[in-house]
Image (cartoon, rainbow, N blue to C red; front, side):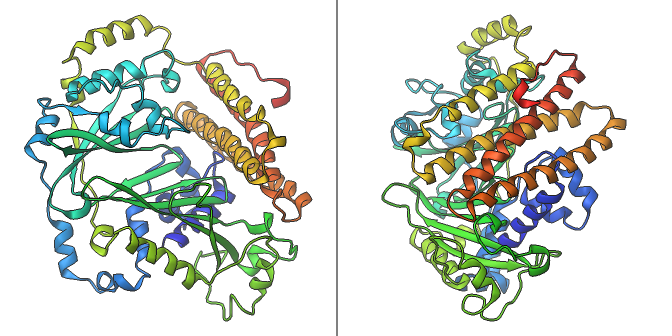
Length: 523
């Protein structure tokens, strides 16, 4: 089930993660019995198969009994191929155009805080239509723009593409999923565009991004599952759908906290002896000032094998209830009540059994190199690229300086005027900023370091992880489980991780023969 896999991922990360961030669910599940494999997993992050996770989780619901029993009809429906329409196929062939006008008017949120992917899409002029070659050349120009190309590093200065036919809402009318790999959010990330014919015109109707700490998947019928790490012990995942009309509906967001010691005041709790208590929160619909209600529950897992423990009277008369009763300002439902709320929400948004179990999408490669240059944009992009070839590579120092500038923005917030929840979120975001950078630097070192020196650095990193986790846990003691605990925990995590980033960055710079300076407060 999804929660068990997520817990496995968290426990492995707490003891073995090498780069300060958690591996994906798939990596944890594959490597949970082999410590050495787990230690190496941070070097190659594979996307989590979130659709399978959602299916495992949904199998607990009563309306999925026929899938558990092996319903042949559902299997036949899943195996039916989806074909592109003539218009969508013509776009892939470079003979038809798409427009971003619908997206910019109905989807992109320019007023508040845009999604990661929108930072790229907003740079694509919406006053014209694009053939696939023109879109390729426009993206080439964007990523080589001096104001945007921060994520270009070494040879990753180009894009690649894949496409697939999907059928949102299972109405028999196909849509196109265009997956674009490139340096959008970090040096290696993915932007997926969903394209649908509306009133005779191909329009981009939805988009999502993926990177090392966040995985999103859309199945063949438009059911969307996302998951990501909010820190060493906290993971979130959500579900949503695209319906037959191209409309997007958010389902719910669920969060798992596998280290409750920062929330409880019972100092006798020992995860290794008592089992691991995981606390879950659930929000129905997207967050807003008018929709901030959350539901809570908890489950207990065996520390060694991650199996959920069957505990009599867990929510009425158990040592775990007494422990969780010390968490302030939270009322806990039973797991059955919690799951029923999720199940009802799925039915409410139209995520039927068939939609949820639509099957994986099969992608086909686009020959980007063959199409590149077949537009008016190409000559400008090529000329600009040639001029910037000698200066496009970002030095390690410049990369870290960029992170420092973003971190300074968090440090400069007016925390005195913010409520505790907003403060906690801001501190967590700043910690995650440095944690993401740690992951990026680590992967580069592992790719460039002399193999004979790798094991020593791996062992050193393991030791640092344990020290960082202890420092973060110790920092929460002052709050005694109160609302200040998260601020203290992730504030300390940011301090420790920032220092480690500079340490590892100096090693990477040395490998590359670059100069690198570490500020006094990061030594």
